[in-house]
Image (tube, rainbow over all chains, first blue to last red; front, side, top):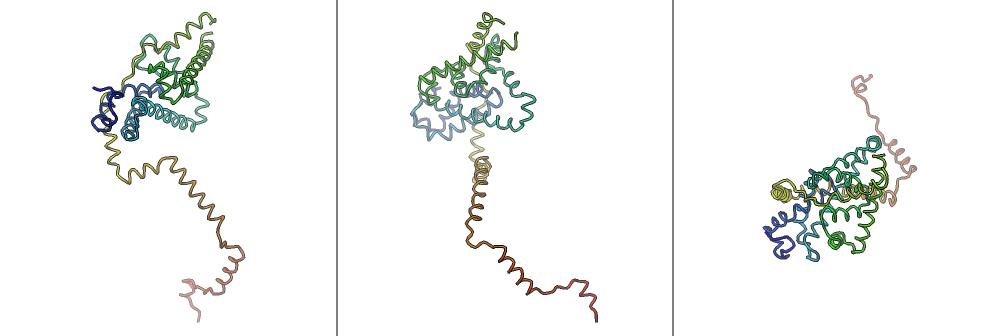
Length: 189
Length: 111
């Protein structure tokens, strides 16, 4: 099977090649979406939406960036849209949110299936802390740590300069350290 | 917890994604995507139109335009009916009014 980035644009537009794109990128898309949404069922649904948009938008893909970069962009924007929509729905139950703090509990309990068994508890704490980061810092950190992208690839996906990505990573790490320090000092006095 | 104990714990949490494998979606995702694409293709004109109109932003924009048109029409009405002209109309209507009898009057006519 060809890697999606190695397929020429003229060939990509043939319907049969679409199945190659799905097979080659499904784990990448699902993993990125799952890192943002932190819910397996919803992540799967969004993954399908992403590929529907990829199929419908293939004509507009101009080969200016790598196919995987373009698909990453669609996946991240879909996941963020979904997250915003979900937050808006939760804000509808304003009183419920104030008294129960349900959103916090849900985030803490997320268990990523790809994390090593002995690191699962720590990863759960890290996911909860990541949710408190500003959006760009969170995406940059997630793409680097969970997706394994280097800074240049992250810069391409996020339409940012290399310097901006480096700065985002440093700020994300520092903020996470602060958040984790607060977590440990309040939970383990 | 003092600083010496804290730092290793924080580093351990920050590095907890190391060695993580990519999560995999359920099998047959391609089949499900294809069925979604087929459903969209067979939705037809009315299906697509209703889906488009039911988008919150489109519906909201439509309502906004509707209200705006109403305000525009009310503000720019060239021949508004003032209360005085309405009163004249009412008076002339009374002048030409025909007394309508009720069923009781018709059945019990006095000689």
